[in-house]
Length: 393
Image (cartoon, rainbow, N blue to C red):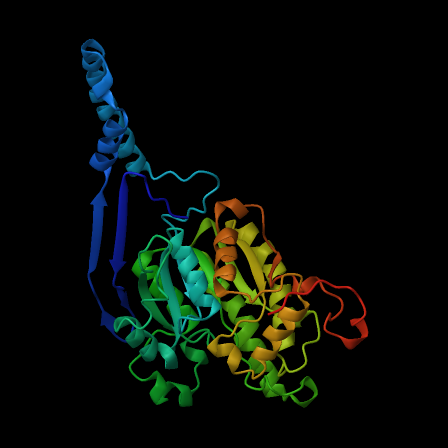
């Protein structure tokens, strides 16, 4: 995703520029570079050992060496300018992404933002209003600098942060007690409709829309004990929010763009403990992905996919209360016995929104070390006598 020409070595450290409807912060950038063209040519001349040659040949070699010097310098310059990458690079230069649901530096939303930025995309994020102040402050003070590091040594830049509560489509939907809540004080234009209008006013259009939102107030309750209010709240925040986001952002998405969301295997398999209607919400999200792929594809040539990600020890997942158990289960039973990293999901997202995936839409892409393919738990005592290869972890 990033190329470093042989003639130069650059290390860039960039402080973020970001702003929101609540406050604005700015910072500068510093670039360090070292040029190794002359050093490379000096090594070339030294390695040729011309001193042993007869005088006429020495003269001819020196003349040839000067030409080689000019040619090599030109070739290195061209290599540095073009920065071509062999193979099939994921190139998102000139693309703009809006990622809804980034509020810290250890979730899938953050990892997707990093991968898209590493591929060259401009990053805009939507952050839940009550978490906005802490998120912006942490960015400004450099608390996320280590996790902002990109493969080329630079730091991910977030162009703008928008306050967002995707539970509400427009200002008329917001109840009075939320409008007057102190956690929303000082912020404006944070409903889905207003966020889309703000992005349009600031940038005109986007190419990529990412939905990284989920919430179930009764997630720890079994489905049989879930209230109607809790069930509908889970569906509203975790699945309909995607319909609303795409509905309002679609008019400002450039044709040929792409949108992705995040789902979980509980949509099609029983995961005890993942309750409160969240499994239902994920099932709805996957069904909606197929319908939205058809509608958005026919209307504006927009591709719509969802990533079914494995368990990650994120702050949001810890709220469920059994994330460590799910990670251990995956390590014991998945075909690939390793812990899933957020970057693996981020890199899959970068591929899905890139031209390399131009014919993929309406799909559920599993990024879970293959756990979705298993029909039995290998850690069951019933299978103890089978000779199944296992890694010690």
